[in-house]
Length: 138
Image (tube, rainbow, N blue to C red):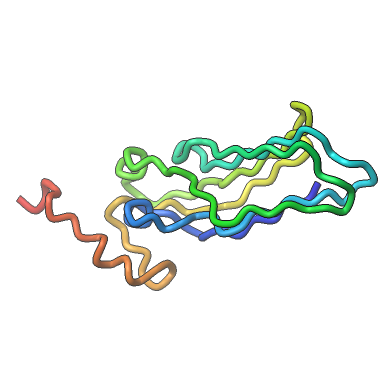
């Protein structure tokens, strides 16, 4: 089983609040000699998102399946709690008939709630970064 994932290298509260997708494309491929049956695909960012799950009845030999723009449902409460940037993993796990057949971790950086991505991310999010109701403004 081969897994290919295209995703942003970082996530932030501003990105979550503006519905910027984290995962752009997920592709699984069966290079093996036998079809793989009863597949479940799980995707999550440790402690920051609810697990996203998809199911396939069958993936034939040399076949692949692609999902585009996956909404991970990042937790705003968890993102607000991040005080300093941290590195974690975006994990993809593929199971067949309940057994793990492939798992891959992709590193991702989680920015603090008050940290701007600068030119590494989407510079146009600067306007969304303003927090006029933050207690520090008082």
